[in-house]
Amino acid sequence: MPELSRTQAVVYGAIAVALLLVGARAIRAEGGAERSFPTGRVEESRSSRSFSLSGQAGDVVVHVAGAVERPGVYRLPAGSRVDDAVERAGGAAPGAELEVVNLAARLADGQQVVVPERGPAGVAPVVGSGEEEGPISLGTATVEQLDTIDGIGPVTAQDIVEFRDQHGGLASVDQLDQVSGIGPATMESLRARLQP
Image 1 (cartoon, rainbow, N blue to C red):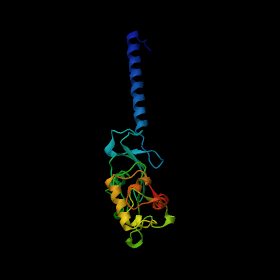
Image 2: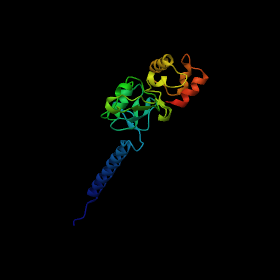
Image 3: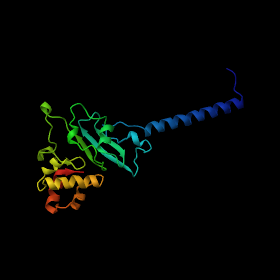
Image 4: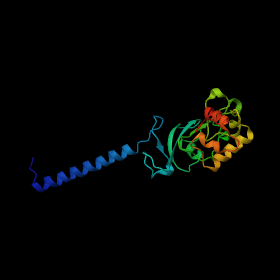
């Protein structure tokens, strides 16, 4: 085996260092783009490629559950709608009952979007109609769902939905104390039955 000249050794050494730097950069880029969701990591939106997974002040993080292709937790840009979250979760699954979900509502940080499944024989389920079914998502609750809460009638339920839509979603149940007709007793019922 012939010996390398000093110049050749320097050139080969520089090439090796360059390859190590390129490899380290590629590994770092792969680690930053890791997006596996049902394990709990937040996945970025297709329309927010400029946002990092560590989050930006303008992001909202939502949990999409129910009849969607890929339920999980997703990061979307502020101002996104429920429809964007459903699409980010792979779209509605077969049998999804999208008619009971307000797809036009703006998302709030920490919100859960639940897409219910169609009941037997095409009967639409009433999501969150019973206390035992758990809390209703404030970000997607319909007038009918809100009307099932003690102390809330159809007029107040409509006022809540309009208030939510005017304010681009709600981050907290406590924001509802600004709605006319909601007093301290009603707020307690709302806290027990709603989640942001």
